[in-house]
Image (cartoon, rainbow, N blue to C red):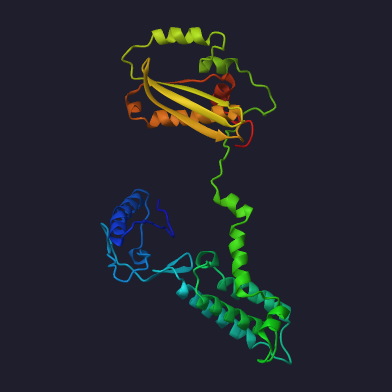
Length: 352
């Protein structure tokens, strides 16, 4: 079985090009090894190397891998956007303007001052094709460091598109032409695309969202669950007898035992912020690790205890002494959380 990977990117940053090249040397070999293990092959003709800097005397070194020799290039095309060394994007803007002018020149021949196509139809077609291609990737190349030449090239292209929409004479004012066609100036177009990424909707997309995953249950959620069997399986003893039972169990443990015990708890402070903590012991009393998990004001105590169970188990399994342990015992002061985790019913009282 073979797979296919497209548009992979390896990025490294350093103060000098030499240090950047050293960082990149090991990454391609790891990628090739991963591809070999997963049945993915890489096309050597499509492997490109690009250094981003604003110096003239720097020597750009080639990248040596186990199979390929990659030489640095002056320009690369990544997801339809052309990147150059200094990130001024002049080639990207120039090629986008050329593509748009080819379309506008062709459409302009379809109409004249006497006869032709309905201007509203032409405007809709140009805005959906030519102008969409012109401003593709503007969220990447538009910024405060763009030169006036870039803005001027885009504005000239928009003016030609406006003259292709309306059959007017060459002496017609550009400002009046843009007003009648409804095409905004270049700065307005670019700021519109830039502000769209700064909206609350796109901020929510860029943020890492916590997902609530739950297993399918055999019974509907409104049905009351018999927790007697789950309590016996989990070893729940209740708050009244927990201290006595814990002391009895500690006496049965060997002093040199390598098993891990994880003590967990979660609560809220006076301001309403939830937090949780865990402490990992080896044997009866040898503390190995501990941690604190701040969860903010949007998490309830029930959810905080679930979070700390997962974080505590992750920390215990990642500990170097975990490979010597036979058992991992978890102590939690909430029977409800233990039952929910054991039975597989929805593990949260609300969306986290």
